[in-house]
Amino acid sequence: VTKQSPKFSLTEGATISPASGTQLDFTTPQTYIVTSQDGHWKKTYTVEYKFSNLITTYHFETVKNYSDSGTDPNKQYFQIFCDTTVDGSSMEWGSGNVGFMITNADAATTDYPTCQDDNGYEGKCAKLTTRSTGTLGAMFGAPIAAGNLFIGTFDIDLSNMAKSTHFGAPFCYEPTELVGYYKYKAGTKFTDAKNKEVVGKKDNFDLYAVLYEVTADVPYLDGTNSLTSPNIVSIARISDDEKKETDQWTRFAIPFVLKDGKTIDADRLKKNGYNISIIMSSSIDGATFNGAVGSTLYVDEMQLFYK
Image (cartoon, rainbow, N blue to C red):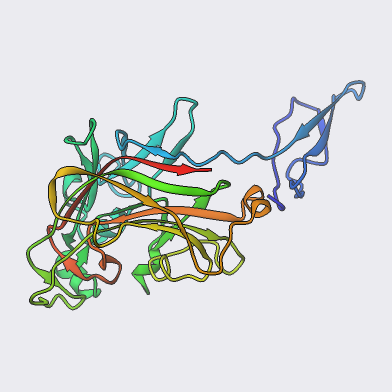
């Protein structure tokens, strides 16, 4: 917001001061003057930037299909979850589906790790499944792709796939609790990143949310530090005791807990100095490509509570 360069379309012959495209600091509102072509008329406008608050109620009812206009614009590859509110606010969830597409471009939409399912707690829901990436994926040291869903974006980093997930979006309130419903079934054969079976080890899922300080060095978290970054201030994570295999919708209510020595600064909140992310995975160690093909996590009717 300190370095914005808004561009304006004017009626023919009119001018604007400061000029369209001028970089200004919008920490406080800025004033523009538009002058008519003949110079006889002027009007003053005050321009400011406002941040829309993040959506905090998630029903997983709406998806849109990703298509690649550069190859086959008619093929629908995978689904992108979109949540909206009655006032028109919207957000798109991130997932690793685009990474899976590299090795499995011919997969059906419902065969991707993250997709929608019709049998939700109410209506439809999110379905996260750990999938095999095949021979090509194994060659890259990524034999599985865990189903995942998170607030943030996915930007492929082939040198370190765990860094492809960019977790977080601005949040200006103090989070208190993450509540929702889940079902889970673990796959039968646990393998490591070398695609070797680990006898006696059983897969499990993960579901958590983190509030963290945004700095120049840490503009977002990723798969390497989403639970370990020193920038994390508060975390809500489902405990091992709360996780279980079940084919019945099971409610979870996870409180946010401050990290030792950390506090939430009210002024920093107002200045959008914190990001938050909710992160879900069908395999708890999916970021390091350890897990069981077939592990499936269903999530629905989730809400982020805050002060």
